[in-house]
Image (cartoon, rainbow, N blue to C red; front, top):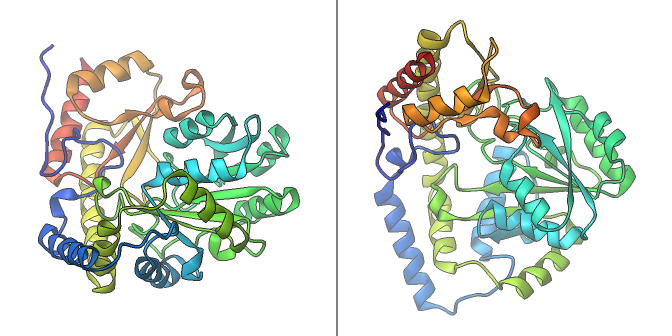
Length: 374
């Protein structure tokens, strides 16, 4: 069958319905260009700092932002700027684990985190999730002495589940008892569509076992490649020493531009605008799914983020899902791909909606439904 095409919006070449794509078509490029130009002038007019923690004015701006927005109260000197989330995860693994150690990972879970863990010689322990999030008791049965756990509690990736208060306390208690560490990836926690923003693990951590990871790839644009870690006090100096030994520091011009963007209030305004746009685009996707898949797909939690999951109500083979995705040209991903063993995954789809217009989303769902029907 002839390909049905790949709807493309400005600034992204990802096919419609691909998860993890922000609204680059709505990004305030002129405002960002002014901020980055000012950052460039500052960088060329002064001595470039090589602080492995990152440019301090940006760390101050981030601390001022995540305190009220995410409940993460910290000293700016606990913040480290890194070159994206993958770099952050790799750094923590090198700092805190040895080959042969074990690490809990949500199952289904973030595939890049799984790859990073395996790349560092650490054994992945896939801990199943239920309606409350990571099943801590199951993790303790599987690997009670794991060195760390990687979790996405505000919006479990990819299921969308918000970790319950009890599970959060259980996870923190496990880490405290076993001197283990928790990487909390807050990759899109700012984009809550209904209700109040979900609290972070770091905001209730009293034992200083949580390493909070935030990124600007979803709130700004992926190519920016800037993320940050909020480190427990005892990890700041060893993490800084390791970062300096590995790569020195992150490019200063982008850091200065981002600091300008945050301090001026443009970042907060952009996040507010995107939260509204994402809510509208999500509703467009829900409407299209109800029109074409009302009896065949069960939609998962949809209160937060840039994507949602859909599980097929009736049995369908993974081969048919893969074939329909290929023929329709859409970028949705099979849900089974996020499980440690795809053969035991649940037939379903991970559907992104943030990066495309309502019309493009509706058309993408129609093409997918047509491909599945044939």
